[in-house]
Image (tube, rainbow, N blue to C red; front, side, top):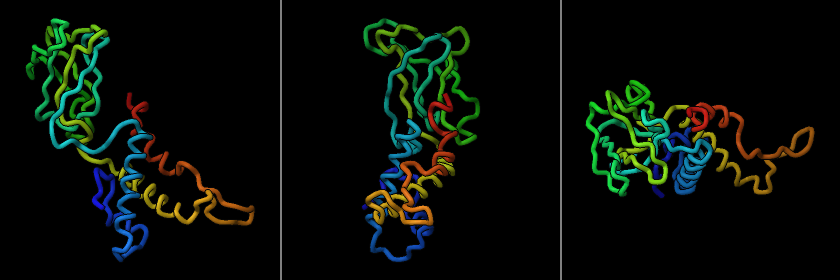
Length: 199
């Protein structure tokens, strides 16, 4: 099985689990995919970058800027507005009309999350129809190392979960040791990357 947009590699997971053979490669790849998508759900965003451009629509409350989904690169970025309220995005803003934010985001391996209108320009603020269309490559420039580490931990935990189907990982002096739904270390590593924390 091929890993699809995984946040760690098969080799990284096998190294942590000290597995040298290839017998369980398909199962391990599935666990990496599961862990990666769980991270997407937990953080309410995804960390892999699209390979092609696609369009999404947005609204603006202030007229001076729009909040956008994570954009992995400014290359190919196109911003259009529907000034006629007819569902067509006929006005294309030039590079001089917009500023991507945060400043220097891509250089810092962070995504673009806002687009500001510059000069005398502004974004339409109608809310009945999303008046702004952004075409971009969505996602993050690179997978952050804490996200990669969290994926390894989660995938490894999913592998071990097969040995504790009833939710018991073993027994200690105080009785059964339960399996927690979210590993505290994973939660700690992902906390700075959850969408609510960066809003």
